[in-house]
Image (cartoon, rainbow, N blue to C red):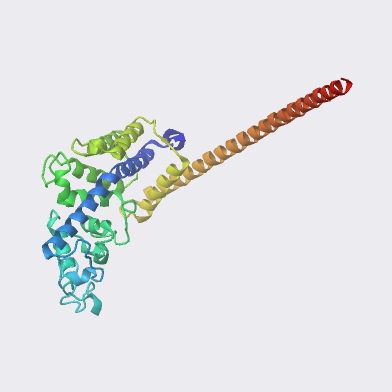
Length: 348
């Protein structure tokens, strides 16, 4: 295990990477809470639909695609108009709008809309044919409209996607102690957490001041420690502990965790459009230097383990040899004593 201070060298670039780590820790802390609530949402919608339609609770439909369930044109989704006569969303015969044969999918669609704070689900994110089999396909309707089509689980979803579900799905209104409804001032902890994510992702120079980092961590700790449900959540509690350790530079990370953090940061740089080329080049060089340092740490650990293993092996071999010698000596003593006993019997 290594302290972050043993690995990271330049303060404000280090703070930017620490902020990324704080977002990752927070996302992990929200895992059980968010994933469970999305499962509840899926179950609630499906149960309500089958009950209303008088169908067996296990009745599902897997033949409707998302395009079938949306009229053409649908706002922000279809492009059919004066410029193009072919809709990019309903572009084949199998994707034309129609009713679900068993009426389930239409009703599930309406349930998803009704649970969306702004009644505008991100339909291009989701696969309707998997609404009954994968709860995350339902959850994806509450994420931002771009970049999540290939996501299949909580683990594959980034911090912004997770926070967006909590902000846009009204199910979470009863799970948090504060109001999520839009308000100008002060912003709720969820909105502030989303702003932290934006600030880190959209940093133009890949730097964060120590004061800003402290504020970011405080915002994330406040969210994870919410008094309604999260305060009793084991993962959220562990995330708060790690964030506090991150703040005091006492958080220990495995080489694998550090490597993953650097990989995530590098991927962000690759996709970033707002970062200046100069800053991007500096941060990439810094990340490369850190990767070399991490590899050196790993090599040193491997070397120490090998040396320790060899030392233990040699010690064990010596101890085994001594034990064998003792066994042989004891055997010779017993053989000698037995020979004497036999001789005494014969003389008698």
